[in-house]
Image 1 (cartoon, rainbow, N blue to C red):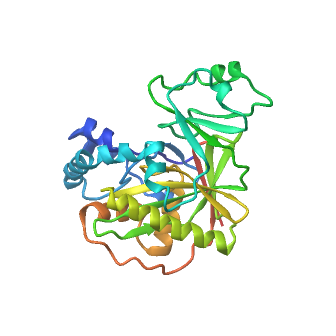
Image 2 (tube, rainbow, N blue to C red; image 1 turned 45 degrees about the vertical axis):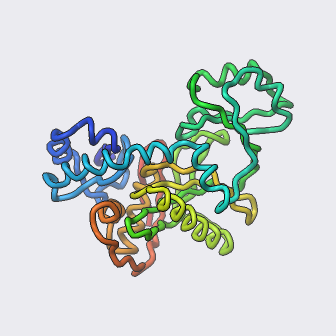
Image 3 (cartoon, rainbow, N blue to C red; image 1 turned 60 degrees about the horizontal axis):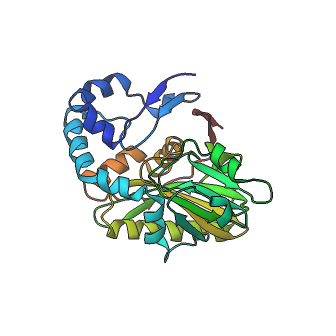
Length: 300
């Protein structure tokens, strides 16, 4: 492994304050040198910039202005309510807690909470195999105060994710999709690029992602977000929004930088601080990459 990368989120920007500038000077590396590197934490905005001193103040301002909206869009019930008219969502309902859940479920479902990531606080329940003790013993990490979401289980072909960047004038930039690597139906462990999809699915992903971005824009959201989908044949289902960079953003930056001549962090920066740039795809990224167990590897 070469370098270890550590990127901060909006709340961390507030916490670090002025010390962030010195921290970034020690921890900034260009992604071109990171094949085989370990990713410690990749969250929201800006892995590297030259304008560190001005950048610190701007980050604090944008965090204070936007972090409440980012947190709001991390709520899975909020997402589904806002997006129900623009994307296909599996049938679901919410309950206040896990008590006597077995008496309410008569088919295979996904049990999750309104807040969570990477498969944490997510459980697949099958009434033909499991009982209430199974639920109780596998939900120790669940919060006692967040509602529970019960969603119909979908036997999917692929788990798909991508980034969108929402600009202040309403423009929505969309990255290429990537295939998520999911273990045991729920646990996220990484991703791989490229992803094999039918033309029909690619079109659905592009159109739906733009529609989602439009709804988020009208709700006041700005900056980057991750969108997760799952496919069953040519049917595209919405899974969730991650109101931040996703782990696979690390690899998607390689694709975006090559194809558009502008890195994903710079595009995020411009979305929050500058006018919308002219983004035109100039060439195709021909390599492949994987991220698994937080190790990034690129292949010719």
